[in-house]
Image (cartoon, one colour):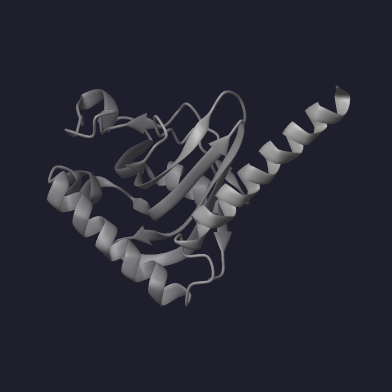
Length: 188
């Protein structure tokens, strides 16, 4: 009986590893570098501004934006996510970042989505840039509803140091949360 459990665990871990590896293939892994990431970030911002015009106001008020054009998340019991993007200050790319996330628990499926973090204060941006690996926590305020149908940027969210817009979801996994995501500076 023990042998059967080990086999199921090995199968599940293999399936998760395969899912993550396959999902990452369309995610900029092995891409041509900075030019490709910048082009994807430009396209992502264009889509966000067209779909949610009020995000232009957030962009104008922010001290910087982290644009993650494509994050791929997959899981079968255990799961993970990966993506690459750019940090822009005053509309100029200043650094490149990756995002990783590991999850556990009852989950199955895969999804892809884009997200943009708006750093609304100079301190929030400085803390992000100085950190060797910044982890997103419960302090992020989401300004797009789960349905992705409107921008909710009222007075309360305008006072939050970091605002998140998650959009462009595709896949068969329920929900997209950034909690537990770790952002690390990279050289593309």
